[in-house]
Amino acid sequence: MDQQRPIAALDALADRLADALSERTGQPMFRGIVNIVTHEQFFAGLSKPRAGGQSTSHAPASVAERIMSLTEGWCVYTMARRKAFPLNNVLDYPRSAGNGAMHRLGVKTYLGAPMIHPRTGIQLGTVCGVGTETTQWRREDVELIKQFATEGVEVIEQLPRS
Image (cartoon, helix red, strand yellow):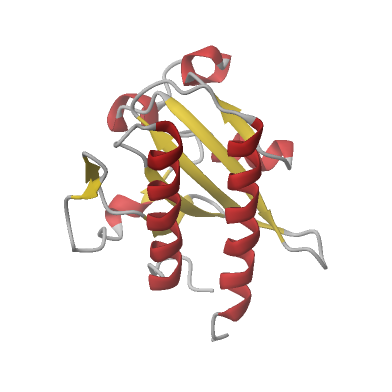
């Protein structure tokens, strides 16, 4: 898979994730992300910005908006855990101090799960939702993000090989 190319099917998955998290929490400002992690993070799937639960843009994010260093965000920690990572308040996680994603994007809550290929055990990346308000994640929310991670693997498996 080309690491620097947005993938429409993953953008659609990220949009559906953002909608689902907004609906479950009542918070309108969630972003959904499908993150392919290599020497950097690339958001091959990224939901459109939202306000009031509605998309504020019809244009897909630029490639520059989709790149993040490995020192930012929480997806790298999700991959290290190899399991879902709910952070009600990102400030409760000691490694959040100085995290650029928190400051640049206004992230206050994170819920992510690794995308692990079922036959090989290889981690392909993560699926996550980030929001601007702290959230009390529940078991159902963790199950939801794991379902989205499974779907992300399925979408990636269906992509044409180049």
